[in-house]
Length: 270
Image (cartoon, rainbow, N blue to C red):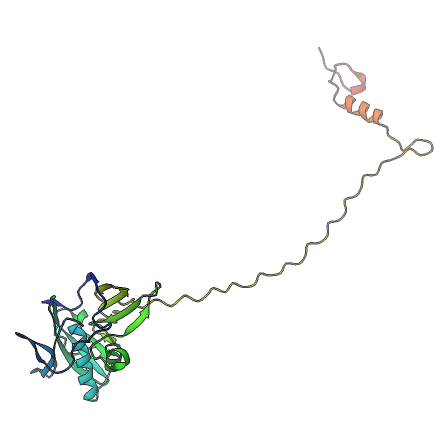
């Protein structure tokens, strides 16, 4: 036997048991063959909780049938919610067997009376949501999950198993998600067992809207550079400095100092 909410990855050939063909039998336990029965059976425990057993053969998951039956019992008793208090599930090539403990509730509060050693495996579910998800196409096949969405490759994705329809847990802030994710890719069936909180594709993030760029004022026109004025000789030539005079002035400015030169105003000794 294995606890609910295992982590396992399975790849099998053949379409999902609920896709085409005969759906699993849903109803009170009846003889299904030599030495076994199929369907569900439920009874009230001494503490007032429900013990629901389910068995399927050749198709469908017994845990889905047990969950649907728990939600159905809660709804028929006039309750909107149902506490799922743990259980067990075994799967063999021939038979699929599940046992589930449950209790109805009028409020979406944390479950009371958890029977599991791991409090994270107990949760509160919306009974109507469980029946919608596990009611089959059009609600005509109890215990059979419906298509939840298509992935980015266009493949059908089914969400089912323990965790379906969850609205509250004993652990504040803990995620709740379906325990089985099944992807159907043609004849290939890919199944992941284990809580899948983010199984549904995340919504696309909102598009980032950038503010319009501020309009800068046009640059001021560059002032025209003043054109050099060429001085021309006027009558008398008093304002004209020719190139030869400028050349002589520059040459004299860099002329080495010579001692005793009276034109330089001072002398040095040899």
